[in-house]
Image (tube, rainbow, N blue to C red; front, side, top):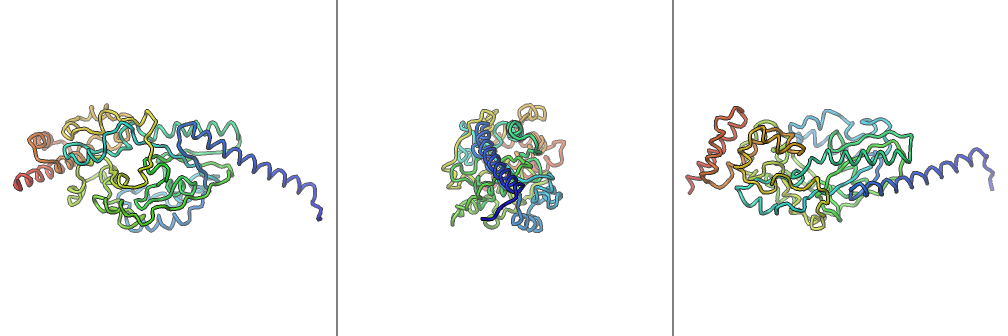
Length: 372
């Protein structure tokens, strides 16, 4: 039996002890995360080579539209250690958000006089909720490991969160490009903790979409151009949230009554039969946004908009874009004196953007009259 130098044996024992300590810490991190309200916690390395290739192809096709931030960071988005030097692992976490008291989504979508708002935006802004919890998790880790650095992300910087969450065994990328979980569907938020500790990593989740194409077939604007490929320029979430200028006229009739985001691809997904309603009070419906009349929301002046939506993700798009979106929905609404009166109140709005979309909506209503 070969003899090993004492120094080599000591190093080997130290390495084994270190690995045991990191495994214990990883288990504690997952326990702490769940105690803080996250339904799942996973750990991945930082290798995103395949995702980087797919990202660059997506950008080259122009599918990101006017979301310049998707391209301006270069490869930092797909190379965590370049974005945050020293990063060795990424802790990914998910939190259910579907509000238990929300009006049935399909019922709202089928009523052209009501405003449909993506279910994630009915309560408090998730950025603030998740960041607060992640800060608390980082503090817990600090009690067990002094020498490390970290950075928190909550959809707030160039991070490939779906790819990282998939590597961390939180789910797999569905054909609609969102993360899917067999236990929780897709009604959840993701958050990340970039960290400099060499924690043990989890096994990536397998894909379980099979031959299902419901999300592709249901998309109102056919924005899912192929499995796992989204042309954001056609996506209603992009058109109502990210796009700051004029919505392409040919896409306006397809938006229906969706004034902020779109959930159709999630609503038809079979895996969401297993989704859980949120237990977070912060995500409960505020101000009746789950089933509000279009005319009521269109009447909000800027002061009311800011007061009602303070602390809500919708607040970020601003009052002008809010009115633009609702004007389109009113153009698609069933013809009525109430709808026409509401549109007329803003026919001479100070904003050229609002005036343009109101004029279009009035034309749509006139066309409905001629067909009656």
